[in-house]
Image 1 (tube, rainbow, N blue to C red):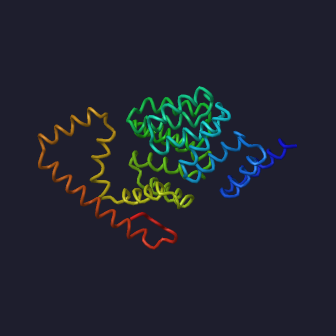
Image 2 (cartoon, rainbow, N blue to C red):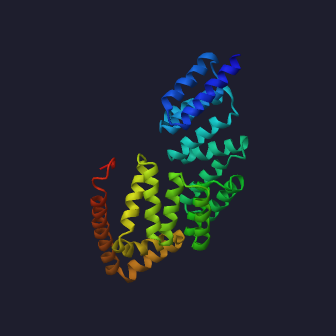
Image 3 (spheres, rainbow, N blue to C red):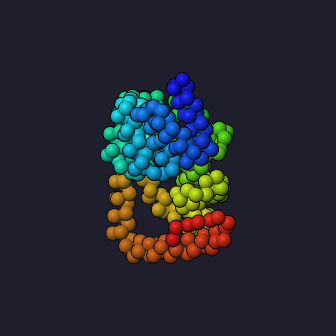
Length: 292
């Protein structure tokens, strides 16, 4: 009887999570703990709710408590890894994700997160390898497909990038994260119209996300021709390997010192002016909030 009641509480909590009614979900889950103190399933779900609410310290606490009860609990490990990933704790993330993969090697989200970390470190080929592993496990995941398109765009494979975009769109686009990645891929390919369209849809779906709002502003700024003109050399440098980028910058500074200084001034002025234009463009949009 107790197990049946527990499953009823957990099922209701899961439904509240889907509806984003997190307070009610927590009430159901704490109800489970009153019936079954130390229940790892309930504690892991509590950790997940706090993760969804952006309460990383609480999420980490409850995930750790669940793992004390069940050291191999898959959801608790996933929450723990996600906390370290989202808060940029690289050392803790590496340690946690390797442990989690030993317990649950078929969880595609781990490979996706590793791919993102490697991409930020400009280890593009390794990032693509990990992401392809995630896609083998979930070939119809729109976020993974969008990320693959972004990585291919960075690698100069624009046709492959567009193909991944088509696949992501075919899988249904109700994911703000996927739309943001498609927007970034379009930016790399130089398609400012699609970049802006994707970000407009992403901010419509999740207007409260600070990251998405900032990317939407960046997309609007990039749609300005003057900004794209001065940004193009910077985008070219960003696609180079670090040693090539350093060598080229050093060469330009030695040979074209005054022109480089002039370009920097032009870029800063254009950046400031186009940002002002963007702010005017979005000013007064209902519900729009932006950190000063």
